[in-house]
Amino acid sequence: MKVLFDHQTFTIQRYGGISRYFANLHHGLNKLAGVNAKIALLYTENEYIKRLPFPFNNAFGRKLFTGHYNRIYRWNQRYCKRRIKSGSFDVFHPTYYDTYFLEYLKKPFVLTVHDMIHELFPKQFPDNDAVVARKQQLINAATAIIAISEHTKKDIIKFYPQVADKIKVIHHGYRFEAVEKQMASTAEKYILFIGERVSYKNFPLFVEAIAPLLNQDKTLKLVCAGGGRFNADEEALLSTLNIIAQCRQTNATDAELKQLYAQAQVFVFPSLIEGFGIPLLEAFSAGCPVAASNNTCFPEIGGDAIAYFDPTDKASIYDSVQQILSDHTIRHNYIQKGRERLKLFTIEKQVQQTLDLYREVAAK
Image (cartoon, rainbow, N blue to C red; front, top):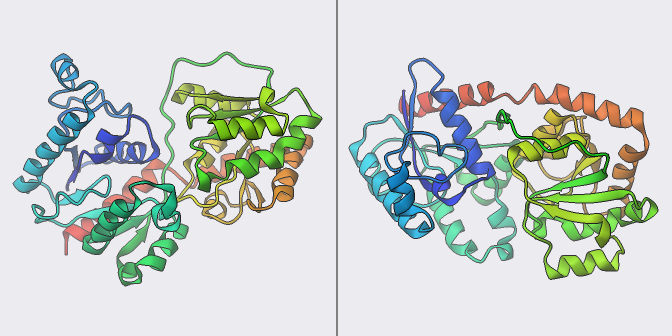
C-alpha cells in the first residue's frame, strides 16, 4: 500500500494540531509492514517532520526559503502536482482544503474533516467564504471522508447530508513526543487554559466565571499557554475583574506544555465547539484533572473522566472548577479516570483504522 500526503499543513503550520495529526499518521503507517507513506514536500519548517530528509531540508534550502512563505508554498505545491501526476501511489490524502490537485488526480483520495467551525462560526474567519467553498468541493469529490469524532460527523451531515454514507469516524490517537528539556518545578497554584482565545473558545465568559476564585485566593493564578499575548480587550476585562496581576500568557514547547499540565491544579476547556480536543488527552497523560464543556465532542472523548459544565453558564463553570480545586478526593478520581480513558485513544488504533480505510477505497 502506497500513500501520498501533500504539503499543505506542513507548509502552513510550524506547530499545530492538524500537522501533528498527519505527522503521527505518516510515522505510524511507515512502521507497518507492506506500507509506504510519503509526504510530497521539498522544504518544511514544521517541527514534527523537519528532520526528515526532504530535498531542500538542508543548508541550501534554509538559505533559499527561510522567511519566504509564498516561495515555500509555491515550490511545494508545484512539487506536489508533479508527484500527483506521476500516479505512483494507491491513495492520496490531502492535508488541508486547497483544491489544486483535483484536475491532476486519477487515484482515490481520502479527506480528513477536523471540524465544521468555519461553517458554524463564519464571522470568525476573514477568509471564511473561500475556505468553505474549497472544503465543500473536496467533501463532495472525496472517495471517503474521515471525521475525527461522531460529533464532527453529525456536523458534516448537517451541512452535507448527501455524503453521509462515505464518512468514517476515526478518533485521534495520542503520542506525546519524548522530550529532554523541562521547566523547573513550581509551587505556583494555577488554572490552565490552552490555545487560541477567539470567540468560540469562550475565553471572556470563562474568566468572568473563575474571577471569584482568583479573588478569593490571591495565590491562585491563571496561566494561558499559546494564543499570543493578551490583547487590549482581554487586558481591560482582566483589569475590570481585578485579576490581571494573577494572569499570565506564555508560549510553550512540547516539553514545557507537558509540565504546565502536570503542575496545574486543573485544566479548563470551555470551548463552544471543537472537532476532537487533543488537549484533553494531553491533560490525561500528564495527570491533570480536567473541567470542560458539556455540549461539544468532549463527552464523547472524555467519558466520565471530566468535570463537565454548561459553557454558557458562569455558575456552572465556577462550580466545576471550584469542586476540583477544593476536594482532593474528587481531583484524584478525575486524574485516575483520565489515565484509564487515555488507553482508548492509541496511535496504533488510529493508524490501523486509517490503513483499513485506505485499503477499502483503493479496492473500489
